[in-house]
Every structure is written in C-alpha cells, then in structure tokens.
Image (cartoon, rainbow, N blue to C red):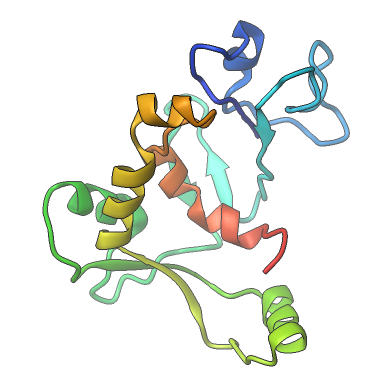
Length: 165
C-alpha cells in the first residue's frame, strides 16, 4: 500500500496514490515504487490479505486474522475513541498473538520465550502517540507526517510484517 507524507511538499501524483494497494512486482508505471523518485518521502506498507482488508469505498479497516480479544477488552477502533475522550489507563486492546517467526527470532536472538504473548496497546499509549506525534505542523517541521487514527488501526499489520527486533 502506498503511504504518502501528505504535507505541503508532497507531489500531487504521489498524494493521489496514498492508500492505494498494488502488487510489489507491479508498481505504478508513472512513479515506480514509493520512495524511489528523487526526494520522495513516500513509503510502501505491506498489506497481507489474511490480516487486513481495506474497503475502498469507505477506507475503514476490517480485521480478519488479527481479531482483537473481546473478553472485557476493546478493539482498536473503540480504544482509539475512548482514548481521545478522557484520561486514565484502564482500557487496552490485544490486537493479535505473536507469530511463530517472531517467537523463533526472539528465542534465538535474546533467549526469550514469547510463545503466549500478545501485541497490545493501552489508552495512555494512544494519547502519548497523538500528543507527541499527532500534530501536523510539528511533524512537517521534522519532515514527517502526523500519526492519525488510520495509522493506529494499522498496528496489527505493522507488527505482523516487522523488519527487525
């Protein structure tokens, strides 16, 4: 999936591609892969069909493989809304179990068995992310884009396609 910085410096042709999904072996003909154009700050985010299904008509995410734990806990969308509405730190979301590749890597590299661990985030962490990285003007000065709800909802995808630990 193409992810553009969407600030005042982004090329119009790149902004139009933000959120579009394409096969890695078949990048857009006019630009190639995100980040390959001169001074391009766009990135490609891997999209796994069994983890996330992006609905083009409403751009809302529906999770399939990484179902949140519903036993008294919140899904990411509910947690996000709860987080921006108040304080405290009683709510959280387990948005997926640790996959076997990460379990093996953790055991081999640091000797830690994380077999039964869950990927989680709490409401305080979401507020921290938004406070420290959610201001468009501040992030533009850093050459970044602000974190949004859409980014938070992509957490299951991000942790399932890690680069390194």
